[in-house]
Structures are given as structure tokens and as C-alpha cells.
Length: 286
Length: 332
Image 1 (cartoon, one colour):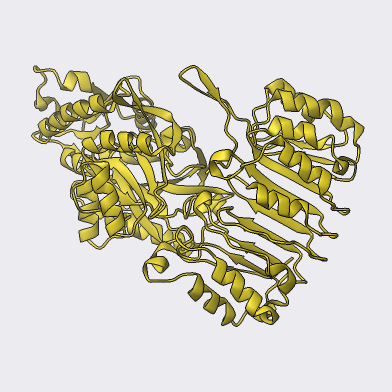
Image 2 (tube, rainbow over the protein chains, first blue to last red):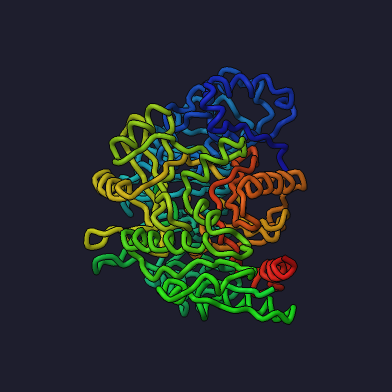
């Protein structure tokens, strides 16, 4: 269990002039910093106006003060504080070298997000939460050298909010990346979730992972049927997360009846009908 | 003393109020709003009685129609002010609380914590955006001044310099009219949002700052506190995936103990409710919507409703809210 601390500004703090720069000063001068294992950065005051680059640069410049930090979450704020698509992220290129001890990183927001060349011996968990993940970020992950990576959880999102790829982007990621220790594969929050389900079963990771996470997307019975037919071939998969989906009741039952795998089919959704059109929305689309 | 309920026959409110009265072997005379509004109805029927006023059922989803029904309701409440009887909540107090602008202004003046309201009159989207910029407040709620619940409420955000807009509402424009639904919609198209806002703001609206609400298990929530006779009678936690939480929007309702709020926080909520309710004369009970500010957990009044006491978790359980009302009304 990490010893963790949240750094977060309220709207009143923002009104009183707090920003990423002042937050960095507060983190650096926090007497608890030397004992912390995890830092969670919430709203830095004006997350929709200014990026968190000063915070990332500050960590890099003061890397010795963060040498104990094993887990970093940048952008922990919900829609009450800021739309996820409005969070202005940063360039993380220099962070990988500055924090060799890092085991887990969670980044929320994909606007202005740059990962750079990702080479890290110890990172076990990489998670990006957003309404749309751009192809350049996919490419950075695809080319990353992360020999220890166990968990990869990506919110694919929709084109209106930054996902400028298609199913071939996912196919390439799975084919060209090299994560020999990956056990948790999460390709979530997609409006092409059925296709994602299909593609995952053609990838090299399917025989090594223990958890498959296809949650929060527009998974329908089409994707459900793929899972139903192919999952029994991979007894290595012990958990299947489909929470927030558009599966029918009967498909949910069939999937839950699969043996040897824990299936989460919570939060069933209904498609929207408007002017004779049917719409399916992933969970996070802003 | 005679106990009278003004409301709608065959409604949950009436059925469960009658059940509460049965517990005390007290007969309740129900006077329907249709009867009350008949010309021949005499206020002498209420003389010296203990009277509770429940709301009429507005059988419409069109906001413009709702507004004209409110006018009729206002007149009926005005008529009731002439009655010589003992009200649970006086008709004046009920109407005062239906006016969000008046209520918030009063609470603010009394130094009771409330969600911030824009004082200026705002009649269209251009004026609204201007006000948001000048106040550096880019997230607001737009609410029709007199409706209760989620009817016509919109949560609106405008990015300060990129121009992106997001609007969440349970309303839709259908055949040129604003229509209330039970589903939350999200709009991101600027033209669509501007059209919607102009239509909404043409109704008399109040603008409030969108304060980030506390969250529980990934969902934000606020509280409906039924406060009566000087104490909290019930708290319902209204959870939502979106910014608009309301009992009628099919949101998940939780018991407050599940939140694990500390006693200081609960005490703060009680204190704010006590101050708010006792600041209005003629008010013995109110549904007080409380926002707990994210991170600080400071309680603030979002709005109040002098008829906001229908809590399903209570009526289907011990029916304590209505039982206490009957008990107190009988003692008058």
C-alpha cells in the first residue's frame, strides 16, 4: 500500500490565484514529501486554462526529492471540477528518465499530452483516462520499452475528443508493442468496442493476460458473441471486465455462465433513439 | 381539531399522509386542488383546521405550459392566505420558496451559506457569456426561477478562450417548445447550445455558479434533507453520473450512512438547515437541497422547497416524516 497524498485546488483557491506553479512550491515544501510513495495531483487551479507542464518540469528538476515516489497520478479530477477533454496535459518526455523508481502512472486528459520516448525498466502500470486518445500517444506506447509493464489501461474515446485513429491503430498497438510481462490489458471506452474485442483475440497478448478489460464502451451482442466463442480457448484469462455495455440480457447471462472466468457485466446501457436514429455512447465522451 | 390535506386524491403524498393519520386514529379530510379552485369553494371549510398544502400535479412536460400552471397555482395560494386556519407551511412561505431568486437572495442576506448566484438579470446567451467572463466563472447552472426539481435545469460550461461549450440538461426543444424529459442529455454543438440557452433564458431564470459537488464511488452527489420542527427528519443522498441530481431523474438514492460522513459534517448540515428553515416565517418543514463542496465538504444550500417532503425511502419504510407532521398538526 502506497503512502499517498492528494494535492488539489478548489475553485476558491483558483480565484485566489493558485496555479501549477504554486502547487509545485507546496509539494516541494511539504514536510511529508520525503515519506510519500504516491503523489496524486488533482486540479492545479486552472487545468482548463494552463497545462501541468510546470509541475512535470518541477518534478524532473527536483528529481532527488521525488526519488521515493513509486506512483504518480496527474489530473485526478472529475467532471464536477473540469471536463476531461478540457484538462491541458503536458510533455512527459523527461519524466521517464527522472523517475526510474516509478511503478505506476495514471494520466487524466489527453489535450496537449506528449509521452515522448518511453523507456522505463520498472514501470508496471500505465493508465491514460481521456475522452479520446490521439494516435501519436498510441504510437508512443506502441514503441515504448517497458519490460516490466503488467497493466496497460487505455481509454480509447471518440473522434470528437481526440481519438483520430481507427481499428488499425489498435491492431498496430497490439502487434508492434512488446510488453512481455503484460497481464492486464484494458482497451476501453470505445465507440468501436465490438471491433476492439475481435482484434484483441488476434493479438499475441491474448494467451498471456489474466485480465481483459473491454469496459465502458459500446460493446453489443456482436462483440459479446466474439467473447463467447473465443474466450474458452484462453483459460489464462481469469477476469473479464465489461462494465458499462449494450449487451442483451441473454448475452449477459451466457457470458456470466462461462466457466473459469469472473465476468463483470454491471451497468447495462440502453441505446438512445432520436429522430429515428439509434445512438450508442461510450461512458466517457467529453 | 380538524385535519385537512389540500392536494391530489389518489397520489402517493395523499395515500401515505392518510396512512400516517390512521396511526393516530385521526380522520383526514382531503380537498383536491380542483375543488379548491371552484368558484363555489368557501374558505370557511378550512376554519380553525390544521392544514397541510401539498402541490398540485402539473400534468405537462412543456415548460411554457408549466409556467402558466404556476400562475394558476400562485393565485390559489394567494386565495389560501385569506383562510382562518393553522397551516403546516403557510401559502406565503410555500410561494416564497418556489422563487429560487428570492430564496437565495434572502439566505445570502442572512449569511447562510448558499451556492453563489449571479445577481444581474440575464436574458440571453450573449449576456450570460459576458457575465461568466467578467466573473471568471466558466461553469454555471441555469434554472427557471419558479420550477421545482430538475425541470428546465441546465448545467453549462464555456471554455474561457477555446470557445468550447458543454451543456447538460433533461430538456429538449420539440416543435419549438422546451419539453422536460426524465433523461439527461449532453450538448456540445455551439449553435445548438446557444439556441437552447436563448430559449431557456427567455423564461425567467436564475444563474448559479456550478460548485463541484462531493463524490462517492465515482459519482457526484448532493443531499435532500427533509428538515421539520427543528430537526432533520430524513436525508437522501442523490447520486448521479451527470451534474444534475434530482429524485425525479431516476438517479440512484442512497442512505446517508453509506457515505460515512463524520459527525462534524452532519452537524454542519443540520446547522445550515436549521438556520435556513427558521429564517422564513410560516415555515415548519422544508426539503433543503444541500451541496457538500468537493474536498472541503462545506455544506451550502442549493435550493429549498416548502413541499419537498415526499421521500420514497421513508414512506415505504416507517413513514416517519408524515407521522410526525400529523402528530404535530393534531397538537395545534
